[in-house]
Image 1 (tube, rainbow, N blue to C red):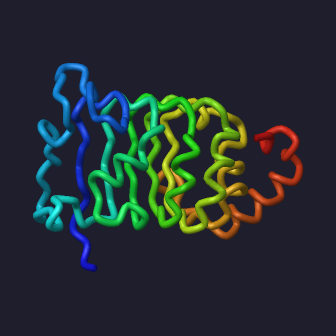
Image 2 (cartoon, one colour):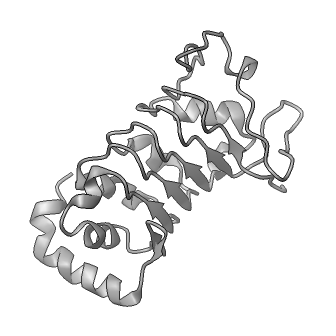
Length: 191
């Protein structure tokens, strides 16, 4: 299947990703998300199937007010032809305080943007170790990036990362992170 460009639902005032699609917006009270959410147009036209589901591997939900991802699976099934093939998810600049376990079910996820949220606890990153294809992650702009050893911890927990916070992860950095994790594991690897 040929995939199209990202579905962009950013800047919509979303408060939650919910299964019933009611009251998703603070200022709109319509029953169905399809009645009032149109993806932002991009340079390339979006591709849909006969059920108006999008043929894409990328979804942008950035710049909203999302705190809860409990029904993300339902939402992906609603919008995407092949939700299990989602490879890029942008949840940056929302109000998330942790890394929801539902993200770990996205086995094909390669790029995950979580920067600009309210994630406080460094051990939340440990959950992402299940995502073996994840190679690009952003977490800067969260409280966790102030922790001493932040980058070492993330690289040691996710050794397959190629980029963290839009910066390349070097071989030397991997070696240092591995050494660092050995001496700091009792502080940071509690789940």
